[in-house]
Length: 261
Image (cartoon, rainbow, N blue to C red):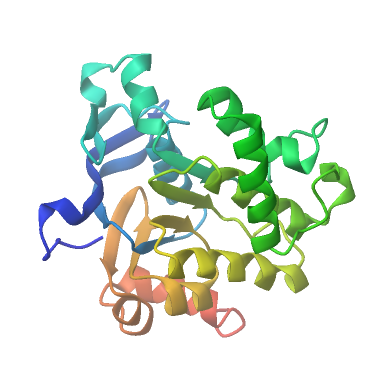
């Protein structure tokens, strides 16, 4: 999320001067950043810092009050009150992985994954089924095609949620704290899938408190607090040598919770 030194064509996501308020509370204040194609960007910060609202705004799940969001050549200016058609062009390029899985409980695992490709993208059921089965095998869920979500563990449900997002062939994958609702012993399964996606070249923006993942997988890290990006850069700089006092305090509490009290 730094200045692109390799040419504008490598910028996949561009966010400029984004503002969002809920009533009198400003949640995003003049937020600007960019994400390069094929990179992983991690958003960190305390609860209420604006990181999830930023992610949901990019995904079209929240409507910013002002600012622009562009993916590839599709640009939306929220000060101009964009129409539904323009918003759909933007959101069609995005896959979103929720914190709480959000699978359809009445559908099988296979149906959860193929619903979007068949209904929204008008792909054939045969093609959608073939790809979904391959994704399930890739994510360690072979043989669970006909299972219902309630028959799966939380980690398995989250991996189905990731497969559902990937099956849409988005340009950008967004993850909203994908491991925060999981038991500790299954967190690594989900993070491994995400690391493999990064290795495959997927462009990802991840909201997470998993600092080891940020260190090992992220190309860029941004620390948000109070609705602004306080500090951003390469993970080794932001996480190991933060320059801003607010970043230092946050990381001290996350990395050494007992020492912070």
